[in-house]
Image 1 (cartoon, rainbow, N blue to C red):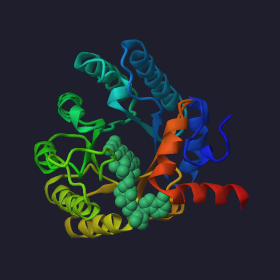
Image 2 (image 1 turned 135 degrees about the vertical axis):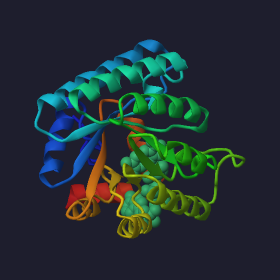
Image 3 (image 1 turned 135 degrees about the horizontal axis):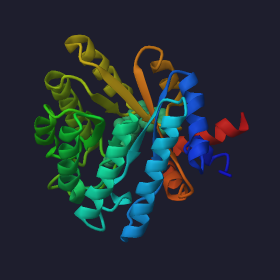
Length: 277
Ligand code: FAD
């Protein structure tokens, strides 16, 4: 069983526990993106095993009456093993999910994986005419070019600030520069995309900007936040906008939990308050 403090950020250790979480969120108007915890496999076997686990998860979503999609980390399905392993596993997951009408997101990891991830996404999004989405990171200086390339590709794009510590030659390092880059990228997306815009941020300023751009251009968008971060805002926003909560599950929760706590000590305080209140 998950320690209570961890269960603020992690939807359960098993797929069935995660689906119970989805049901609770759906009842309050929030959609869920499920991510099986696991990353950086250097052997093919665990990468194939996690790909299989996603196929099972997608079948379970299809057989249940909950509204959920999935998000996959490239290094969890083989990108560190090789491009072929990654592409084969991603294709299996997307083919199965499209057949079951379950949407697949592809997370973005550090800059050494960007080209391979983008190429694989583009190929599948074109082949399946959507059904798949990709995360792009505003802190990378290349992202405006990537967005221009992706503007006419069917599918969805999740814009995030970027979670990886990248070299200064290729990435903005100052928070104010990253925020400025995020604002520019988001504006471009509302101007040039037909839809499929996902605002992957807890930042009230970025969400305000998205609402403003939506009013100006009429383009649809959704808001995505992590489980355990600004949960109240998620429920409130869901009264008016489409909101997705990114909820990880699985037994490899330890490093994910510490990452959330390291990121912001408020996360830990919030989790502690939820337990004692
Ligand atoms: P920050 O700059 O961290 O915070 C801005 C403001 O948001 C704060 O000033 C505060 O007002 C509010 N806020 C933030 N956190 C809290 C909190 N705990 N409590 C209260 N208020 C808070 N990164 C990747 O590199 N690749 C991915 O594939 C990826 N996928 C993601 C998917 C989703 C759904 C989300 C939400 C994030 C994802 N990220 C990913 C992480 C992302 O890159 C950022 O590191 C992370 O979201 C923090 O940036 P932020 O935009 O939330 O704002």
